[in-house]
Image: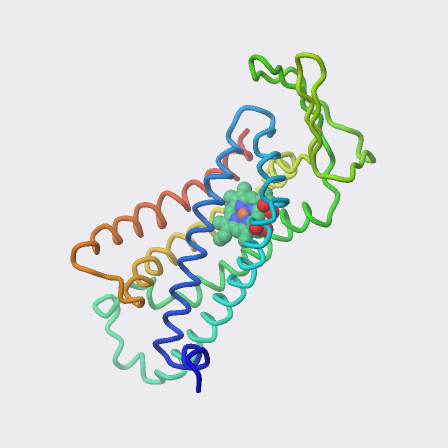
Length: 259
Ligand code: HEM
């Protein structure tokens, strides 16, 4: 057996893979969160729309995206399988189960929390990612003053207007003209629906609980825990991944709903 198949079949190897893929997904969440903060700019979505074009056309990011999709699928299905196997391997678990004295409930429910997240990602990607790539997102024309950077005008292009690319920019006198697919409008319209806002907010609790255990556990599984750094890892796991990131994401649908 070579080291690759050993890695995939030994229980330690499986933990390593879950930890590495999990930490990769955590790093995606940080980038996704920072990029999405542009939804809060008061610029009718110009910065966010430009960012979406960059993220979907830059060759390096496009390649990383394919790795991301594969990682999501791998981490999710391997996680569900592991949770199922662990459950089956402990048929008398209720007899010896000592509730919270054994472990935090998040660590016992990683499979369920991960499954909620998988459902969320499928709904989320079909709403935005699929629509942006394969659906029809209308264009908007933004005019900005080149000297001050101020927005001069914003005009929705007719539904039937299409271009070869997602964005075109040109200079007209002292103004910059940007015609770009308006993904911002799609996001703001989606979050007018209360049930989607609710789904997002509930899913962010799942993100929070999943990462509350997952982040620090990944470091433990990789053997990267050390007395010197454990407090820092615990701090980042709790305050960044289980509070700030889910709260920031949850703020987006809530913001558009009440806007
Ligand atoms: C609640 C706030 C969120 C908003 C407003 C949001 C918005 C978006 C938008 C507009 C896209 C499509 C643009 C693109 O393809 O780059 C997208 C893609 C995506 N989102 Fe989110 N997102 C949110 C939260 C999340 C969360 C919490 C996760 C994961 C748990 C997530 C996972 C993804 C993935 C995997 C993609 C595809 C990325 C790619 O193609 O590279 N999103 N999101």
